[in-house]
Image 1 (spheres, one colour):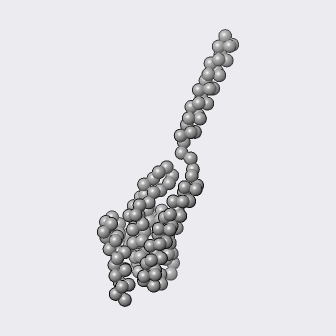
Image 2 (cartoon, rainbow, N blue to C red):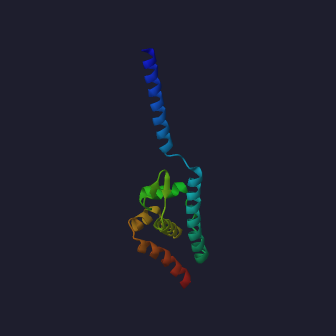
Image 3 (cartoon, rainbow, N blue to C red):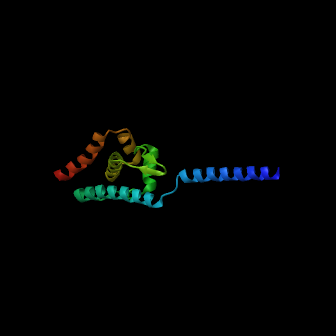
Length: 145
């Protein structure tokens, strides 16, 4: 009888350990290097766009407006609807070229001295063509100077 109880106890422990290891195996794990890579890629894309804009316009941005939005600013833009929500792969946000267009459009409008409320009323739900027009309109203004 004692041997039977011991057998079932060991069997239960073995099955529980197998289930736990299976859950741990498929549980999503943090990927700090992947997060950092995505952050650097997004920062580089926005940096290139803003550097080209600054070089073409050669203008001074209003006080308090950063050239490059940080991670918190992009999250705020997403929360307020200035930027679409990114696709998520686990804990990693995947941004598309449309997101870049939206961030560039927001930063360009801010560089013109507009408040975020004004930018939000203009750009919320904007199509890709509208966002490209914001980009090219500033470039056209610079060319005409």
